[in-house]
Length: 424
Image 1 (cartoon, rainbow, N blue to C red):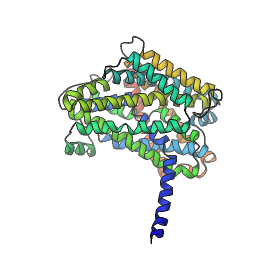
Image 2: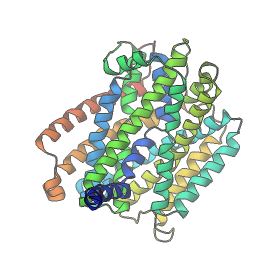
Image 3: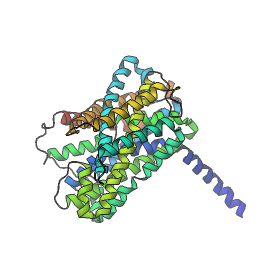
Image 4: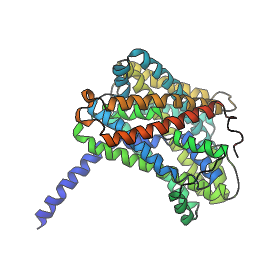
């Protein structure tokens, strides 16, 4: 009888071990999406509009799963990164244009991540002239001196630390019946501020760098078609987890800052405001979450850029390689870290313009990337039997059209912030 039970449990144990060996790219990519800019967006959404935006996170999660699943499928079946496939599909000229836009946008994003590092540790009384150089050196050493397996394990630990936001949200003691009601009850308000934050929440969820990084990390890890079902689960778990974290950020700020009629402009403001409203521990956890997200993203965003540029032009790209084997790859990574951290140490009054510029560039690039991905995923010569089915194509195209329309609106409102009038 004991042998029979073991025989039944053994396949489950084998499948679990296979899942644990595959898991990583999907969870890491999705969680980096909750970077300093994303946390600021969710903080403002909760602080200014309460729980009224929670309902849309379900739809946002579905859209994220669809896009990231296609990215994972492309990476596993072709064994190549997205930049390599774009070069083969569109040629060098278009690839160069796409990569230049991605490079500039990701530099601006990297600057904002180091701004998050500085802001979060300033809450604890640590100067940016100490925190930013130390973090920059730390993330540089981790990538340049580490192997893919070691780096992935560190990134997975960093992903788990996002639970600080879940705890912070619970400590804010929100009215859970109201939270649940507004999560399942769609609502919309026709004023400029609400429309802008509505579009920004969607725009901050799916960014072009995500497709480049996830597909490159899958290729770097060497996942095979037989492991596709496990990587799909990795993607789904990552997307759900990251948006649950986003929901708790909204809840924490809605239950405290919104409930007291206060307003904020940054995630740093949110962390400070939580102290008298939800207690110092909730504030400290919120600030720690911002630090973790900023450090995590400051490592991954330059890495995704190094992957994309190297793949686009046929240069060696792998974390496990040495500097001699992949000089361009590590050179790009180093350059972005130095520039991103260095700009923060300059006496700059505001980084808002840089953040808006990166958001606009991401908005310009996203429709192009999604359209190219759909073209590639439906190429039978490339994907064989792993192309999209008819239903999946219908859902994917509908989602892409909506995302493109919303992204275009986001680009317009970012470029011309006064176009919609007051942000009441």
